[in-house]
Length: 225
Image 1 (cartoon, rainbow, N blue to C red):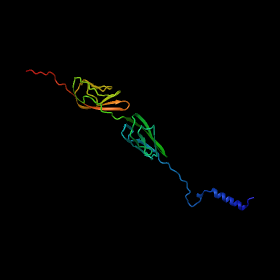
Image 2: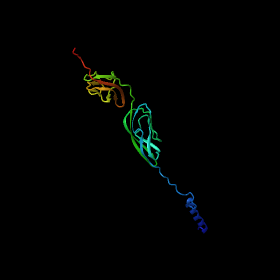
Image 3: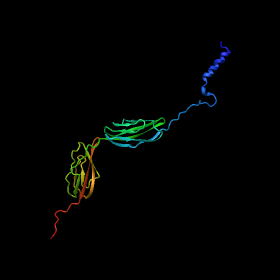
């Protein structure tokens, strides 16, 4: 049977073991530390929200946001070949290596307080292969006289053609061959036109033409003597 002295010692031992060390008075450092989550990042955007890049040319697309600073960045789906998302800063950079049609990419910025995301559009095109060539690049036409068709040289298979600004009245460009033809019907001051040849998915060439349309000079003019 345990004596009174031994029982007292045992109880004292239990109290010493169960009472936390910091529970005494005196204002010691036994208070609990409460972690406060940072503000979540908000308002994510990119300097180039809709971007067209050219294969072989370096790009640098910088994000902006408000609220708390992100601690990680992700993108879905993977960026085009040659482009990378910095997981610490969110900057998209690199030299694109593969052409793609316009595609959506979701960028997500996250910290302990939350996350924000934005969708950007990226197109990657091939560089112009060479200049689209027309045999007549500086043309002067006359009203009501059909022009000799201006036929582009060495066109690419499957190309389509546009021109800016619109040609003078009576002239047109074939959207499938790039040939400029017709009969001008009104005078037009000297103007520079840009023809663009587009070959899917991402190749293009351009050419600049200068066209003037003048009044038709009088023919067989005769004077009475």
